[in-house]
Amino acid sequence: MIYGHLPEDPQWQLLEHPLTMKQYLMLPHIHGTFFELNLNIVSPVYTHKITLEPGQSYGEVLIATSTDGVGLSGSLRDKSDTKIEGGDFVYFDHDQNLWRCRFAPQKVGNHPILIFGDDILSSANVIGNDGKDGQEVVVFVA
Image (cartoon, rainbow, N blue to C red; front, side):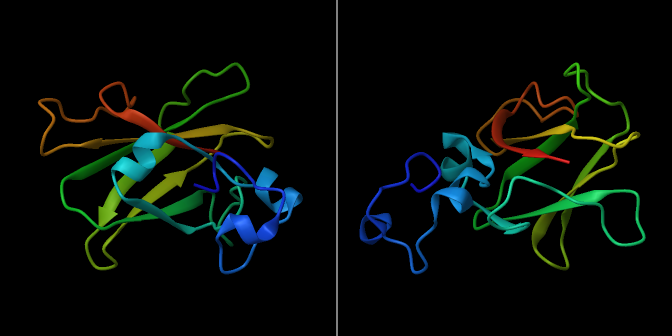
């Protein structure tokens, strides 16, 4: 569980390639639900920063899951933590078998990105675009 604690001795990190403190501080903020849903960040790796795609007006997070029935939603926020309407588009790419979470800020600067998830097979609610029915699983910055 490298996201919650970085052992000082690299051998106790139990990672194939141990992280430095600088690398650890760049990781996205992960919540327990992320692991409960068996999610895996495909891109970007080892960073909480999302940059715009070349030639596009959005940044993208790719998330894989090993189980069916997981639903994700997203929320792009401004500096005052207000949701930017139309600033997020999250969908499951059946061809690549992963979630594409796209975020399009309207202005230059840092914008908090929240990604919410839920087990929709065992939940009575479907996740709404605001994530109120899902639990926060990961936080990035665009």
